[in-house]
Amino acid sequence: MKHQELTAKASRRDFIGRTFAIIGAATATQAAAQKGPEPEAAATHNMMVVGQKTMFLSHLPMFDHVNKDKTAYLTPHRFQVILEASLSAPSRNPNQVYFEDRRSHPMVRMYTLKPEPFVLATLFPTDSKTAPRRSFPVVGLFRGHLERAGNARIVSGGTVTVQRVLHSHQFAVSDKRPDSLEYIVFGKGDELFAAHFIAAPPEFDQILPIRIIGRTFTADELNQGIRLSIPDRKNIATARLNKQASLPAKATVGRNPSMQVMVEAATELYFEEGELLIPPKFEQTAEEKKSGFTEEMI
Image (cartoon, rainbow, N blue to C red; front, side, top):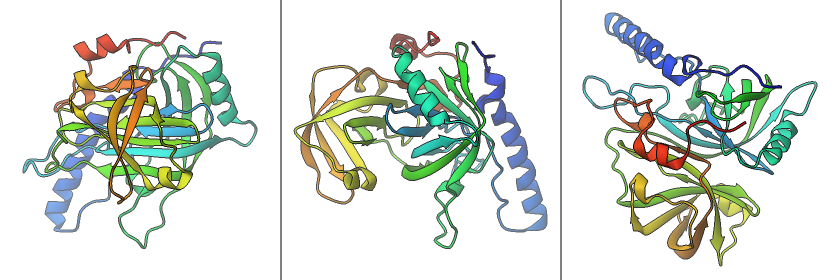
């Protein structure tokens, strides 16, 4: 049964205007009262879902807007975050629903998750005395991109349990983009993915399955975090990894020295660049159109 499609009105895009209003009101209150910074408001942090054996979530980030001093990004989506997670509900197994649906729709590249509003940074607090949040309620899980036409809700409700925060960083205005392509490698067992490392606009978000030739990473190494650099590729969308023959790369596990590997990429599961501009562009860019991410066939 085809479920009702969600439009951009129910997405991060609609939240932007409301967030600016909240931030403005909070700033005025802070100045008047001469108090510390206001706590961040909860937001809807939509996420890409990948994995056929283990569920991984990748937050859909944005730079969007800077403050008057141009020292900080003023959006609740100013984070790149990758999670290993599971989805549960009292009377059913939504995790299994997702895996089975993904297997039965091999041509659909995008699956997305819409959580209830929450503060994303509570998953990785900088204060060592604060316990990290390890679950959050979910509105639904969708086959296709929930912010675009051509999606179907396959799970309603439920709770995400976070097994691990595999990668998290907050965008800083002072950050510089690497000259060469860089990716965050994550996964489990023989199921590996690469997410483009996002640093500073103009940027692009990309997730794709990969295979590392001649080297098998252990679970401990994957949990430490693996960075993959492609020295011979410029850090631009038109030079990004995609389905192609193997390429030489450098892999760095945690703080260890980098090692030479070969990487083989499969067809990308997600690509976005317009929403990572300042200001964001919600109409498709030429490169997005070339990638084929218009409407998923469901």
